[in-house]
Structures are given as C-alpha cells and as structure tokens.
Length: 103
Image (cartoon, rainbow, N blue to C red; front, side):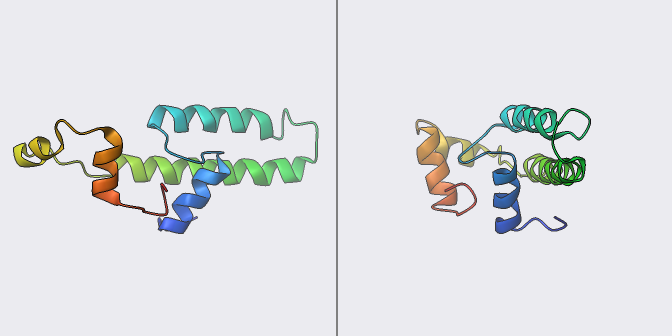
C-alpha cells in the first residue's frame, strides 16, 4: 500500500477490522489486537502466512495513521460557526456526503 486512495484506505480499514467510523485511539487499539492475534511468534499456525498478515497489518495501520494525521481541519471562525449546533453525523454528511471510504 504505497498511495492513499479511497480504495487503499478502505482496504486498510478492512484489514484492521474497521467497518465503520473509528477514532485514532480505536484504530490504534484494533491494530494492537490484530497484531497480537497474527504475529508469527505467538500464532500457532503457518508462520509464513502469519508473517505476511503482520506485514499487511503494519502497512494498513501506518496508512490510516498517516491519513488521519495529515487530515486538515478548519479552525476559522466562519467554519466553526457553520458547524456549531449540528450533530456529528450532520457535520460529517454535509462535509463528506456518501464518501465510499467511510460510508
């Protein structure tokens, strides 16, 4: 996973078991759970398969964290006033619509 596109971000989320929305903390927790489950040193199954799964989990986690870390939020007064009084769902839908990444 070298380039962040809607598809690669969705695939990364799926690899970590994230089907809907998630906070950075939830992404981190899910990553740690998945790595503990699939790490070749603790997994009783095929070590090569476990190693490949761990690599996928690492790439997925880093892609999602990079995406979340570099997402730009607006703190302009007009933008903040525009979103005040709305639910998170209303703000998200207004900003992103039915974006396939988070839909």
